[in-house]
Length: 261
Ligand SMILES: NC(=O)c1ccc[n+]([C@@H]2O[C@H](COP(=O)([O-])OP(=O)(O)OC[C@H]3O[C@@H](n4cnc5c(N)ncnc54)[C@H](OP(=O)(O)O)[C@@H]3O)[C@@H](O)[C@H]2O)c1
Image 1 (cartoon, rainbow, N blue to C red):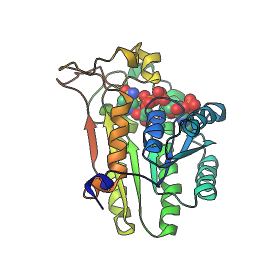
Image 2 (tube, rainbow, N blue to C red):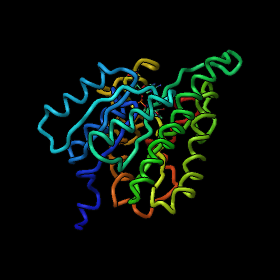
Image 3 (cartoon, rainbow, N blue to C red):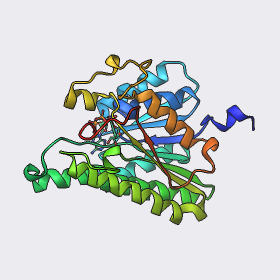
């Protein structure tokens, strides 16, 4: 294998949750451009159909299918993994990208709001990892699970106590699962982004992707392509000696308290 081949995911079957927009969508496009067979998934069949069609019409070496799945729904998650195996025969990599948040002071977060955020970000990650992990173990030749936490899960971020708690749990879950899954050669790692200009961030904070100056030396906002590159690295053989880690990715200087999403 050449050095470049070690960074490739060509031919791999990769399930990406929450890929109708933002980091998930760009990740699906990036990996398909390298030759991966990607499964585009979110709560909206219509939206993921459009993303998959765009990929299939683009002439890239990879291909895409679209499967509707709310990661909070275990039956839907099982159906997502079954549809993947039915179409592509196996699962090499799961990208646990689906996530959501809203900003609210701790005193004003309702029980329902707290549970909803924990359900999507933590329980969704659990459902998908367990369902994909079971199939990877059946295949018997390893796999990769890449979770998405947040910098908000690694330190205090005001108005994000529900989200920060859920994402901090994802960081520990990554390390713990990586140890349990190591004997099966399933590598589990995590990405904890700082602020990234996605539609989710634009709707909450009004920051659009095209407003990001990637040449700025003190850039504090990332773009989805930069997250997709890290996913490709963690999903490839180039990261073979990285297990159970969380890659915190943010600009310089430190983006400061209260800026996290
Ligand atoms: N952008 C940032 O600054 C930032 C920073 C730190 C961490 N992150 C994390 O990175 C990941 C991607 O963030 P993003 O900014 O790209 O998000 P985004 O623009 O808000 O998009 C979220 C994606 O998740 C899907 N989704 C939401 N709830 C879902 C559910 N219950 N089941 C399945 N899919 C669901 C949405 O699709 P539908 O609406 O079609 O279901 C959409 O495709 C998330 O885990 C987020 O927490 C982002």
